[in-house]
Length: 108
Image (cartoon, rainbow, N blue to C red; front, side, top):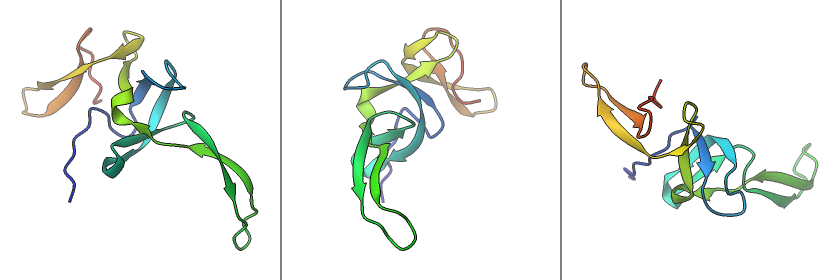
């Protein structure tokens, strides 16, 4: 059983900080803890040659490839740039991720 914790979650808006898609922004589709990766919508696209199966046609399909979690940063909508985050504890004891620069919460 893997209990890895990442600084990003499914549905977060992230910015890529390294690689061929550097400085592009996208939404996290899926977290891959075994590979330390994240799938970002519309980024790191690769072409796959798919064989026809049943009633699905074959051909060349473009799909997202995982990015390493260290190559993405949370994107703050208020600051309009990629930022680091920290954990804050609310009065009710709930932990939330907040922007280091402006203090805006990522966990709505």
